[in-house]
Length: 94
Image 1 (cartoon, rainbow, N blue to C red):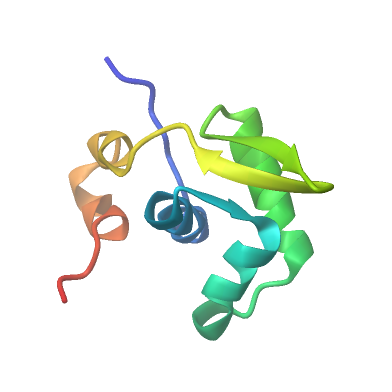
Image 2: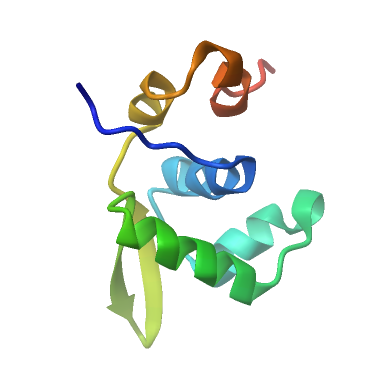
């Protein structure tokens, strides 16, 4: 059975940036989410740190900045969400 990756809506939003971009810094994630969420850099950095401790993301240091990447796929996260929470992890159709 796969490990459960229970994520909040905000964590899923952060993960979507990483899934779309492949890799991103805290500032890049913040800039991407700013129009809809208006998050502080420290908030995003804290959430990424917590996700890293859970083995969901990893970072490398480039030019004194942490560059994060997802260690789990969107499909991995979708598989572990209950049917009632499915809409949170699926992208809206465009």
